[in-house]
Image (cartoon, rainbow, N blue to C red; front, top):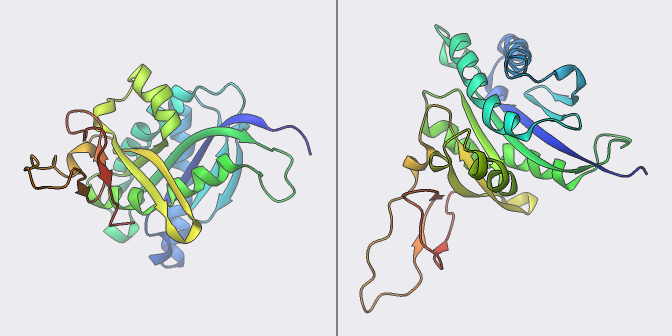
Length: 237
């Protein structure tokens, strides 16, 4: 087994792909490939060098060494959203292509016999398939892309460089119970304020109320961020 390599990872998945008939699945695949090719070219990435595991409804990509995390995290989703908005004009709802994107980074073994052995690969795949990201795309029907980034990527890239507005990200716990997966993550919807869909701040505690508050859904970063020492229970996962 060779030593692992630290790489940027991108997972993409189409919304409602399995509900399409064969013809619409074929068209969606063609559109997906073209949109990803065009979006990466526009932001200055070369997909020729990507290591890609294709799936009918999406893909997992291991990007080349030296790829800009800022470019992937901040530019890919907004450009893909715009290109899909152009593509989807005039199409019936069942024919439209909408994407979930996840971005993470970590150590990856590139010499696997049947894929890429890596906890980071598992992590990014779980993020893109999380109910929390699926719900975010449903919550904004006018959007064509919903992006989730790992907690480490948010804190190292989004917070520091602010190519996208951090206050428009919503902090959530991405959970897939039957996979035993639970991880902090941040969701962004291009052209929208994802934090606006979060629950309002809790009411002021009275003298007889418990010191711990129970929230539903997800917490927001920025002006609506909950204070320290609160408890969050996700009732949607």
